[in-house]
Amino acid sequence: MSCREKDINDKLLLITISKLFIFYIYNLKKVKIVIMIKLEIEDNYKAKSPIQLVPFEGTSKEDNVEVLLDSRYSTQTYEFSLDDLNKAYNELINNRSRILDN
Image (cartoon, helix red, strand yellow):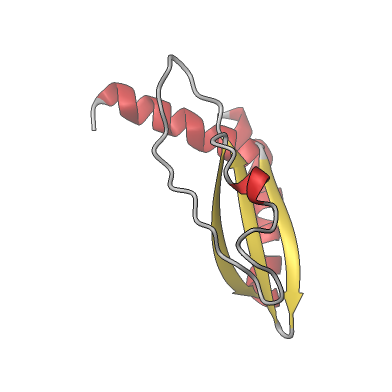
């Protein structure tokens, strides 16, 4: 990876942190989260983030396919306990201003 690509990836990471959309789907004691990240591409740099279509229980791959196939978004699925989610949320809130100021 060239220095230029690393700089762009670092900028995309900051944009990702500042434009994070989290959708909560509750399933017993676990929380399933879909994180949709809007990538703002600079200088025609093309991000190579694969889109993963992961159906949730009671849904199908065809649900919301227009959003999932939008090339501006990358989606991935993670599973957390409620304690993990609360800890991550608190860390994000506590560190947000520090991260965005840098």
